[in-house]
Amino acid sequence: MHRTAIALVLGLLAAAVPLRAQQTWVLVIAGIGGEPKYTESFQSWGEAIVTAAQERAGVPAANVTYLAEKEGAARATGVSRKEAVQAAFASLAQKATASDLVFVVILGHGSFLNNESRVNLPGPDLTAQDFAVMLQPIQARIAFANTTSSSGEFAKVLAGPNRAIVTATKSGMERNEAVFGGYFAQAFADDVADTDKDGRISLLEAYEYARVETQRFYEGQTRLMTEHAQIVDSGDAPSAEAGPGKPNGALAARMFLGGFGAPGAPANASPALRALYERRRGIENRVEDLKAVKDTMDPARYEQEIEQLLLELAQVSAEIRRMEGGG
Image (cartoon, rainbow, N blue to C red; front, side, top):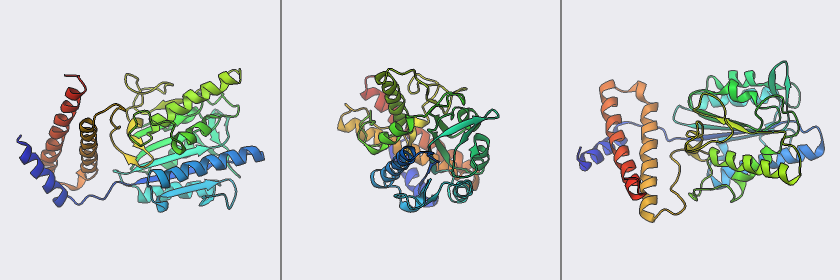
């Protein structure tokens, strides 16, 4: 199809299909510390992620909820009691649409009782199954990171389509204090994890940074590792390593605190190549937005418009491969 015809269709699509702008919703939960040093750490990690979401990623304050252990914690919007967590997820189920991204981070201690991973909160705890029930009505894509000890079972319980699940441990039996959460927060707060140098930190980049730094921590302390992080977003089972050539990581690479989209250009990319990556990201976002309103459209019109968008996406991707020497 001629490029001018495609451009015309894209213009008509923008004018004829009123699409709500994609939004990101961030929910940070800092559980009970048990000791002042842990309470302070969990609160500071939560504050760092919230600050990064608002000041670095541009997420509106109205879209960010931070539940901390204690009333009055910096940037906190409430206390992380069971009923407040449930209310936060219920609100997300009402507000977030299929084209949005819900980014959940849990910080603190966890436990493993009666074959269930739990998050330790002020008052009654919440299990992995409790979170599965809370997530079920949310239509949006979900990035979910449980950085607590004993969090491993969350990966299996919560895994599903359009979800990327990160846990600090590989099973509920890894019960010791987890340091993964501190490095995970640092990945978003500091300039340490942007491996593709596109100015954004993906869930995959944050996961890989925290996983590697956690391993270095134990090596530096000459201690046996008691936490082994894992991720699942497209593979049949959770895995430790993720990314190109691995069973997991493709979806996490497209999830950012500031939204959902294609990963950025390589660090050594030319300006022309970076522009192509940005163009591809925009087209992919349009494809996702169109999919979100599929049920409201005439089927024939939807098929025509999605085919045209996918055609342009294929052309841009082919040009990227050509410029990168892939033929």
